[in-house]
Amino acid sequence: STDGGDTRCFSQLLILEELMHRLEYDHGRPVRPCEFFHSITGVGAAGAIAVFLGVLGMTVAEATGAFIGICERVFGVEACNDKLRSERLGLEIKDVLEKLGVPSTTRLAGDIERSVGCRVSICYSSASIAGCRMFRNYQSKRSSYNPTIVEAVIACWATPGLFSSIFIGNGPQQEEIISAVNGFNNPTLQAVQEARELYGDNRALSALLSLGSG
Image (cartoon, rainbow, N blue to C red; front, side):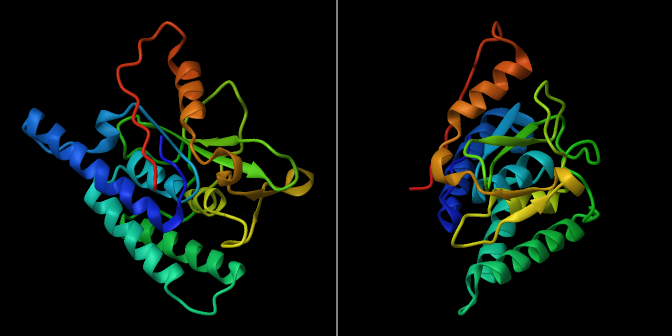
């Protein structure tokens, strides 16, 4: 699981880089995170990292480059309000997808297979009802809206005060969404719950990695 922390989430990528280096040494070949981790859960800015690694199948180096570039162009501009920052974030995510040859309309689940079956869940909250909910790139017994990748990243990173909220869905089912960082900034429990529902209560847990952003 990966904690929220906006630009500080860069530290998670540094830790993960060291871990993947050791795995590659042991395996004698390059290893992408999506090949080693069966599932990844993220919140806030780390939700974007979870998408990069677990949905788009990036290496840590590729995800680091994409994340730093986004932070520089979204947060590096003075006199920028939350609405403008959200618009720029959306443009930056579209640019990342374009460079990978992925259409900006691609949905989180069902439209893309670049990550050898890695399961990604992203925490978000309703602007009107407290609690943590999930976007997923896989089928679950818990129903959830299937956003585009762009919508998913904007929603999970929609920290009040930094970014504006995002409206998803259509007609009467449209809902105002914000980040789940205020209350669920460490989604380890949510990651374990998702894994239990995915693989069953009797499946042994071999490794649980929780990356903070302190």
